[in-house]
Length: 122
Image (cartoon, one colour):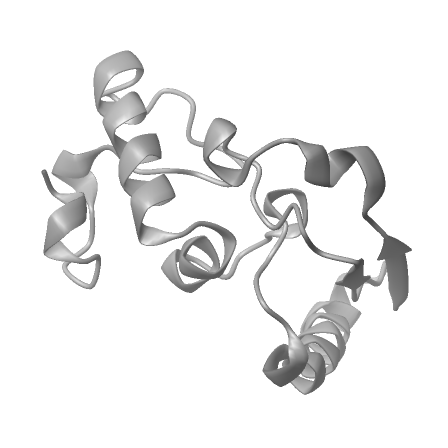
């Protein structure tokens, strides 16, 4: 686990000016692990999830570069509804076939799951 200090110039850019959010954050908490034995997959991943869950009640969001496999819940913690709607609109315009879908995928509106707010379908 680590804390990475933020602040300074990162906070000079208005939140609505870029996809990167959480610009007023003072620290980023990261829980990570690595291993080589596939038999440890479940145990190691669960340890990281447990650490992240312990800090979650004290967190105000997520930084997009550390999102892993949390799915649509991570998108909600990473982006405001308005920012996510803008990103979906960009996805619809420039990548409607979802070619660029690895890592932290923003789905085109035609592929949004039912749990995504209806205003994101526009």
